[in-house]
Image 1 (tube, rainbow, N blue to C red):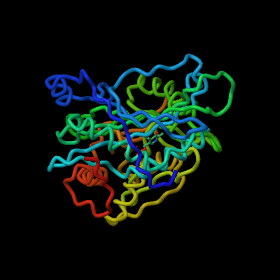
Image 2 (cartoon, rainbow, N blue to C red):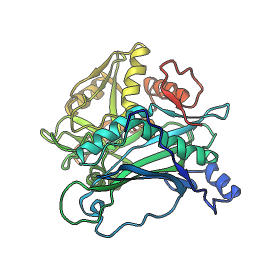
Image 3 (tube, rainbow, N blue to C red):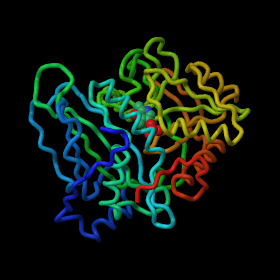
Length: 365
Ligand SMILES: *Cc1c(COP(=O)(O)O)cnc(C)c1O
């Protein structure tokens, strides 16, 4: 199939969409991940036909054979991005080609087929066109888009599936910080890691998340909403949170973030923060950062801010890094100026409130 092909999607409208009042109530207070829009995109693939039966259908449970490969061997990859309503009513998304390429890379690592980039971007447009009324307009709100690919072939043998399906669902999302951007404490997992050299850490795959959930429970038991993982080899260098990348800011304005490796997920937000920070005159270093460097930097004042970033929460400041053995930082820290200004710049671009000089935004509707 030539790369530029525009697929024909067949639209089946929901016969019982959410009533307008129900939808408005949801959009007034969407939270995160709790509600879904009226439709979903579905495309099937098999080894003989490639991608076929492109459709937009009413949101509904999937029918899966109990022997589906995904249920046993976790052959599943996904993406996460957002649709933003701009002040003129148009709807946009942020750098979707990077997500499209990342889905290709993730799929390759998991033995899944390649979904062409153009088809990925088109699938977002198809869903948002059908569900445009589900894109909220309140500040910092959006329709979170979740494309995913699963092996739905019924087969208990172990090999890459000959039959898979790709879907996109949408879930309205409100502001991550309902009452002001406040730094949060992060739990450092000192015993359990997320990804190792040669593994699947760089792929956005379901299994990586499964492995992060027990450490996340441990974090929550200790009053931390998120967990930070260290490198598997030395247990010494910062890698990332379960679903977010990490930065530290030095007193001279330099930003430092762990260099990418096959055990770190290459975040679109991470890449965008690096570009924006450099454009705003910050020096940015991508290099290994040890937990001891953070400890020393925080106590000497060399490190003045820390933040995590990813599409869902965008950018949130970190107050302390702690584990059963240590607590580095200051629990009552307020959000720092570098974190806040990068956060505002990025949010403003995404919501159409600041000029998009880099052509990062792609119009969906
Ligand atoms: C999705 C994800 C991120 C953030 O990526 P963005 O493209 O910025 O949303 C970071 N780490 C992990 C493990 C992720 O799955």
